[in-house]
Picture 1 (cartoon, rainbow, N blue to C red):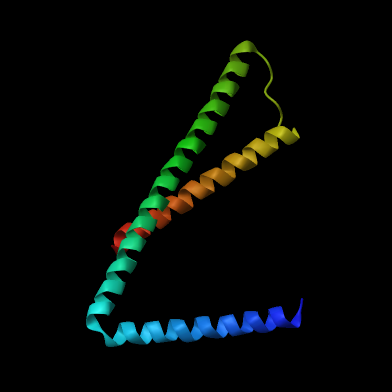
Picture 2: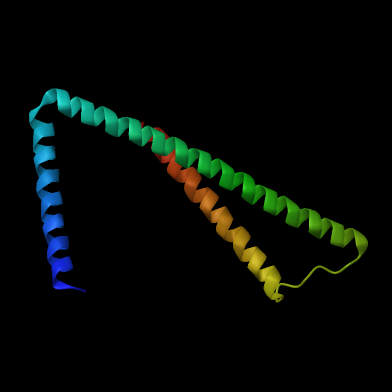
Length: 120
């Protein structure tokens, strides 16, 4: 890394810190600006929670679809008398671990969404 680049990076970091501090002080001192900033923050937070909720819903649907497909495959293999793959089969254990991971993600997203809804 060149010395000039490092100095420029440090200088830019310093300017960012000073600018952020000045903006924060201006916001605290001006009631109108404070209300505007809080309103923007609230809108952004609401938008973000809505996006998280949509993503959680899509993740849940995808997890359910995968689980339904696996159950359907298992039922079909049971009906045809074909023995289902054993748990020692690497592809089967990969699928099981993916299902477990997706299930945990859905649970975490639901919990986070409920917490966000309760805080609003």
